[in-house]
Image (cartoon, rainbow, N blue to C red; front, side, top):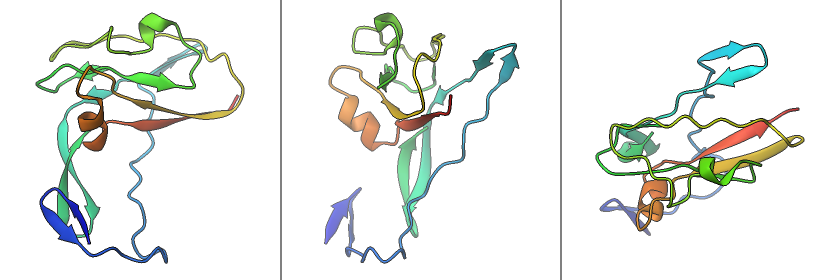
Amino acid sequence: MMVGHGHKLPLASSTGENEINIPPRLESDSEIESDIYYMIDVKQGQTEIFAGIQTTNITLKNSLDEETTLHWHGLIIDSEADGGPHTVIQPGEEKEITFDVQQDRATLWFHPHPEGKTAEQVFGGLAGLLYFRT
């Protein structure tokens, strides 16, 4: 048995019956010359990871009621934009992160990194992948 969010679920076989729920690709908000702009709005939500069970999910505009930040693993980026515990975004704040892609093809990921809340926010769903195809 696996226990999570107050539910006891039997462990299912890995025969492809319980496929992972992959969110849709984030489309850019605008493209001006060689610059591409995205808005990531961090907010409360729900998603269905296991059939029939809604899981609370956190989906850099901070619409949460607590501080957060986004830390970029593998991305060549300045420390001020890298989103460690020293660069939190308060509830209701927006932070523009600007960087040039300085690396070859890569699969990277991001997650929050506020002090004492990292695991809780990642477990809530605030994490994602970046694919660079340069």
